[in-house]
Image (cartoon, rainbow, N blue to C red):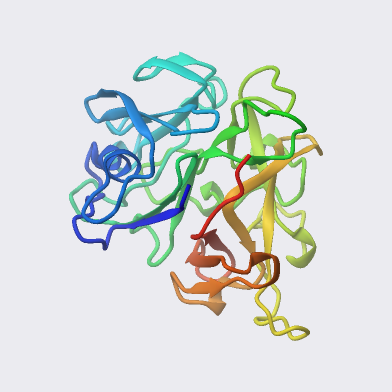
Length: 320
C-alpha cells in the first residue's frame, strides 16, 4: 500500500496539544477516517472509550495498539500511553500485551506537549496499512522531534513470522522535560544490546515462542565514530556530507533484534539511518534516492540539534 505523509499543517488536519484525547483524534483521522484531501492509511478502530481507543492494522499480522490518552501518568495529558496486543476484546483488554505491565508499567509514552494546555504542537505521521511513525515537536526542545511508532518490521525469518510487530518510542514517563536518554534515538548501538537500551517491545521473539520481548535497533555503527558509551546515540552520523569519494548522501537500513541476543530479526519499515550529522540539513529536507534506492524519497527530521536524525522513506516500504 502507498505510504502517506500526514502533517499538522495540512488543511483540515486535527490539532495535537496537552489536552486529553487529542492524540486519539490525530491517530483516528490519519489511520482510520482521513481528513480534508488526505485518505486514511487503512487501519480500523474496533474499540473506543473516553479519550482511549484501539487501532488495528489493516493487513499483515493485524495486531492491535491500545492508546490511553486520558493523562494516566505523572505528566498528565502531556503524555499518552501505547501498548500493543496480539488480540483484543475491548479497550485495555486482550492477550499477548507488549510491553507487559511487569516490563513497563507506563508502557510506551508518546510525548505530546511540554504544557498542560491547548497550545498546538507540530506533528507528522508517516503510515501505510501495517506500520506508522509518529513525530511530535512537543515544545520541550525547540525544533526537535520525538519519534514513536507501531506496526510490522520487515522480517528475515524463513517462512511466516506471525509476531513481527512491535511498539517503539519513549519508555519513561515524565512531568517535566524528558531527559535525552529517554528519546527513541538513544538505543543499543550494536546488535544484541541490553534491555536497558531497548527502543521498544516486540510481540514475541523470532521463534514465535514466549511473549513480549525488549527490542533494540542497530544502524551502521561502523560509520558512527566511537561506540560503546551509554551516551552513544544509535541514529547519530559523523560522515562528511556529501561523502567526498562519491559525492553521495549515505543511508543504511536499521535492523532489529531482541535485547541481549545477536540474532537479527529483521529491519525497520521506512526508518533509515542517516549517516551524516543532523547539523547538515534543515528540518524536513528531502533526499532523492539513487542506486538501490532509486525512485524513493527520504525526509529528514532532527532528533537532536546536532547529532542524530530521523530519516523516513516517504515513498514505499518493503513488506513481508
